[in-house]
Figure: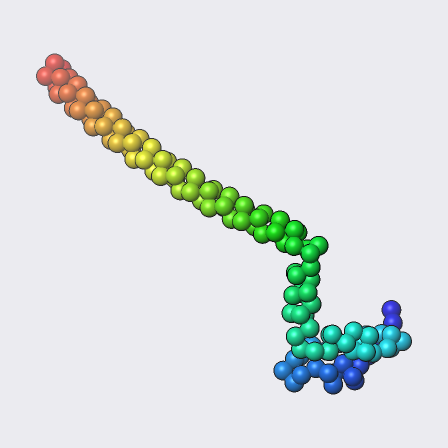
Length: 122
């Protein structure tokens, strides 16, 4: 593994607000000299702008945007379907609770009738 050092010209080219320090191999020379666009504070934004404006990347960017939109639409559809399913389950639960309470009332009334009948007969 090559020994690394910090290039003085790279440090000098950074503005005072930047905390980024370029490290490079000792035998590699100055990175700031090799890649002058990296010495300016906004080089990354400019490079991204140049890449995204490339005619070769436009179809890829469009495809990625379409995929992101489709994924978002799918997520929304799943949320709606989940909400609808939850609503149906809540209604089903309420209906079953109502049936159980009616069955319980029916059982209690039958039990009371049979108990009173047994008292009279026995």
